[in-house]
Image (cartoon, rainbow, N blue to C red):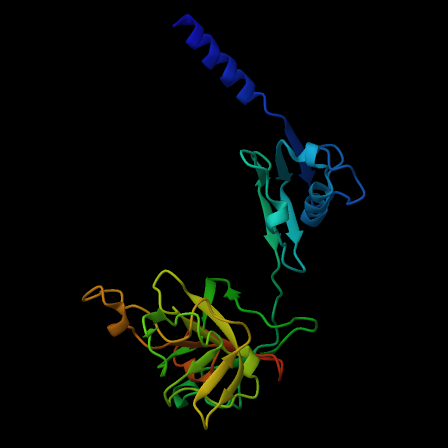
Length: 288
């Protein structure tokens, strides 16, 4: 019994003694610094790239990157991928320095709002006199989120119905991986938009646990088909209803989804769209 206890204690002591490497980032730091607490980096990218350059031996320890309090301007997404992970049983973490609050800010202020004298093509009549318009700031590209003083504002969206021609199963073989960038739709809200690549479809392709936001590449109103810029997870046909009547999902698919960032969705306060071709943002504010 005493021998077993000694072995457990020795194991726990060895486990708690795993080496740990720490880097620090501060808004007033420098990317030419060492990354220590007294000489912090200035950017997350510098900390990430420093970790990437470590030898395999040096990576065999827990690595922690601490962000000191302050505001960090993010001009582009901070990207981590598989090479930024840790060996089995170890970790790489990015975390706030104890008792301090770092703020990652990529917001761009949009100013110069005025009542839209002309609504974007396809906007409903109810939007007349309620929608404001502003120019996209110089250098700003396509964006997907808009906030005001009260919080997040939803993009304008409308439902659509799809019209798949391929069944879920053909000769015993499932077809969920077919036509993954091809959407066949029923006549309705689809248009030949001049800024088609600004438009997204939201759908759950054949499975409720999967959702896709896919930018459109083209729309053919004669054939009632649309192509997406990237493939969906499965074929773009439909999804299982939330309340299934049976386990035969092939007979219960709900066909359709939502079109996002479309003028037709400007039907109520608290909605907006962006047109990157004309470089305009249209907003029906929640509170005028």
